[in-house]
Every structure is written in C-alpha cells, then in structure tokens.
Amino acid sequence: MGTTVFIFKRELANYFATPLAYIFIVIFLVMNGIFTFDMGGFYIRGQADLQPFFSFHPWLYLFMIPALAMGLWADERKSGTIELLLTLPIRLADAVIAKFLAAWVLSGIALLLTFPIWITVNYLGNPDNGVILAAYLGSWLMAGGFLAIGSGMSAITRNPVIAFILTVAVCFVFVATGSPIVLNVFSGWAPQILVDAIAALSFLTHFDAISKGVIDLRDILFYLIFILSWLLATAIIIELKKAN
Amino acid sequence: MVEIDHISKRFEHFTAVDDLSFTVAEGEVLGFLGPNGAGKSTTMKIITGFLAPSSGSVRIDGHDIATDPLAVKSLIGYLPEGAPSYPDMTTLEFLNFIADVRGFAGEEKAHRIQHVLQEVALEEVCHQTIDTLSKGFKRRVGLAQAIIHDPKVLILDEPTDGLDPNQKHHVRELIKNLSRDKIVIISTHILEEVSAVCTRAIIIAEGRMVADGTPRELETRSRYHHAVEIQLTDAFDLQQALKDMSEISTVEQHPDNALQYTLIPRDGEAIFRLVAEKAQSGHWPIAEFHPARGQLEDYFRTITQSADTSVTTARVTTTKARTATAAEREQA
Image 1: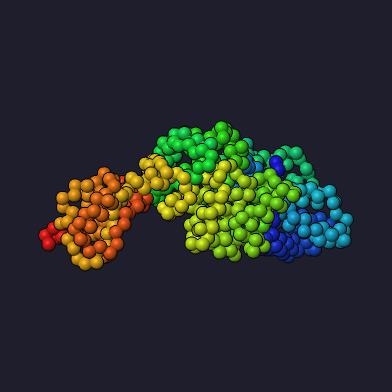
Image 2 (image 1 turned 180 degrees about the horizontal axis):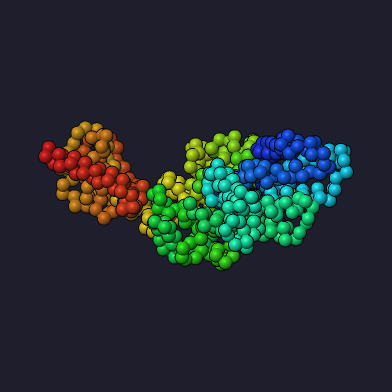
C-alpha cells in the first residue's frame, strides 16, 4: 500500500513536471466551453441545467483521455525504466493501480476546474444541484473507464502514439455501441436481448442515466468492474510482454 | 549467497539462457562476460526478478525469487543496461522516490540520499533534471539509486559503458570499496575491467557457461600464457635459431613490425629462461625481451568463437596470415 502512494505521487507530479497536465487542463476547459455554449446551445435552451455540458463529455474524452493514458506504460517501456520500476520491491498490481489513479485524479482535477460553469448556471437560474453532482460523478467514472482502456493499450506497445490511436479506437467502440447508429443496425433483426447486451456495454447508456440524476448502483458498478477488468488486463499484458 | 540453479530462458525462436547454474558468495565480485547476445542481460534480468525463467530457480539468502519476490528485490540493488531513469525528474527527486519506495523516511532517508550523492559525486547536479545530464552523470544517477539502500547484492549491467577513463576509474574504485561484505555481479564487455575489479569471472556463450575461474586462472588458459615477446634491433632469422627448441610451438611475427616476435610455448610451459639462455649464447640482436602475460581477451575469443562467427572468421584469417609469413621465412 505504501509503495502505491509513492508511485502515485511520482506519476501525478510527473504530469505537472512536463507541461502535459497544464495543456490537458487548459484544452479540456476550452473545449468544454466551446461545446457547451456554442454547439450545445446553453443559453438558447433557456433551461437551468448542465445537460449540454455533460452530453459532450463522452466525445471530448474520446480524444483527450487517450492523450493522458498513452504514456502510462509505453513511456516506461521506451525508456527502459520499466525494468527499474519492476525490480524495486513493489507488486506489479500496485504499480498498475498507482499509475491509473494518478491519471484518474488528474482528469478529476480538470473536471473540478469546470466549476465556473456550475456557478454560471446557479447565477442564471435554480438548477437541481443534486443532478449536477451526480453528473459530475458519472463523468468522472466514465473518464476512469476510458483511462483503464488507455492503460491496457499503453501496455501493449512501446510507442505512445500507437497507444493513443489504439485507445481512441477501442474507446470509440465502447461509446458507439450505445448510440443509435450502431443499435439501429442490430435492432431490425437481432433478438432484443442481444441489442440490450450491446447497449449495456456502452458508456453512453450508463452515463446518460447518471447524468440525468439517476444514481443506480448498477451503473456505478458497471464502471468500477469495467475499470478493474482493464487494469487486470494491463497487468497481464505487462507480464506477458516484459521480455521484448 | 546467490544461488542460480539450472535456469533456462526460452523465447519463441531461440534460447537465451540454457541451463545455467552457479553460486556467488559474500565478498565475491563476479564478472559476467560474453559476446553480445550471449544471454548476459537476460540472466541479470532473471536474477533481479524482472523476468521469470522458463525453468530453474534463483535463491538469494535462501529466499526464492519466484515465491518471495519482494524479499529478494529488497536485497538487490540493480543498475539495468543503459542506466534508465525518469528524465523529467531532478536527481534529488528521483533519489527521493527510490528511497521512499525502498521504505526509508525522515532523518534516515535524508542521510542516505546525502551519503549516496557524495559517494558517486552527484551533489553539483542534484537540482538538475536527469534529462539535461551528460551520459556520465546519468550513469552515476543509476548507480546512486542502486546503492542507496546499501544492498546485499549489487547487480550492474555494464556499469562503465560510455564513461571517460577518469569516471571509469572512479566507478571501479567504488565497486571495490563496496564489495567487502557484499555480492557484486557485473556484466561487461571490457575485459581489463574484469582483471581490475573482479575476483571471479564467468564467460557465457549462447546462453551456456563456458568458463568459470579467477581472472588470473582464465589468463593462464590463454595460449599467450608464458609466451615471450622479443623486439630485435636488426633482421635476424629467429625461426632458424629456435628450430631445435621443442618447447616452442609457434613463432609469431608482429603484423606491423617485422622485428617484433612472440614465442608461444607448447602446453603453456615456462620458456623464458630457456629462451634467455639461447639468446645470450646465440648473440641475438635484442632490443627488448620480456615475458608476456596471458591475455584474457585471447582466451575469451578462443572460447566464445563458436558462438560468434565473425570472430571465428577473423581468427582464421590471422592464423592463415601467420602461417604464410612463417612459410615465407622458412623459404628465406
């Protein structure tokens, strides 16, 4: 446990030592602004909620989170520090979790820094702050899901750019399975249970429910199990690919 | 005590380590030699627990690395090949991180970091990011993290690679000072390093151990052991003069200097006195005359040549050239 904290601290500090953390946060905030006010029609809707803000998060994460995750293991392999790290008296599982948590906390920080929009909506009207809080939680859990995929993809290769592209591709699959584009393809002929199963794997389905203020334990469990499964996959991939 | 028991490492297309066994005791500095691709680094990765062997076991102080990896890893200090470290951290931050993970805190941590910074002379760059350091400094940062917890077993993969002669000397002194009650395992290409710091040398080729002994012992197995080197002042038919000496197997003429010869004894016999007497009685025009020391390099090449074809070819050509010159001399 102790070592997890030290690796977590090192990883998080490293995001801020390289300008990556600052660039990520700034671009995340700018993009959020554009999506919410411009494309989401925040003012035009005339409603005191943050629905336009949160509904773009899956698509924003699709490109931003892989950038955060791509270096997690690929950089260690590229510079050879993986050998240094894994010959220290630590468990591989601790290292996998610590690195994931550092990236997840950074995405949480970026999310928290969107608070001016929460202030704005409270200034303009009387939103249901419970719903907003639930949506923030849902958004952060979804970021965790993207990051866990990114962690696994980053373990596959020593090239961060390849890790980035693979992560975007896999994340897209998990976002798109819930969108009408994909579901309509199946809903015409496939049995309903299959359509439901595909939709059940989707980030959108689970995120939509939470972002509307419905905190269902099943949605939260989905994300937590999803994250743990991908972290387990990360550990297995590292173990298998250590030699090359 | 490090006990390596019949370890093998097989990859999909080749076997990197093939049934290797040895033990290293406290106080020994083991030089691990072999041509590129012989399996040195793989063996070190197995000893440090980075890679799991396909078969066999590694025990350090009785702890098996497969069943008790954390105990083993806390006993080991390891400098991986190329001395990797986190480029965006400063030297001090990096050593702090390693000390944290190694379980040091407070006063003791500060003391250890200070001590190790002094030991490898890193104080002047302790606030610089590792990225900006020269190769020599980077290597010293790698050494510093390996010795910060005063490990029982120190494993260094090419510790002096890329250092200038002063730095090499410094690192060797450091290893010598460290080694009193420790086990040090060094892999290297530089054979003089083995003679300089190691108490024992193991040569591996194609994943198998081909020699194990003290550097001096291995030198005596060289064909140059007890050889005699002669530098003449004028042309003189040495071949003719030595014709009836059955103790000498070959007379080698130096390829660049026709007046320089090496006399190689049969079966490593000591021929120095015999040749000296002969030279005196025959009034040879001698400028220099001294016994040659066995060459580790020569022995290394002989014993690993089946593993490395380019070396083999090179040696065959030189032998042919030598035979040719010998034949020419005989004609003359």
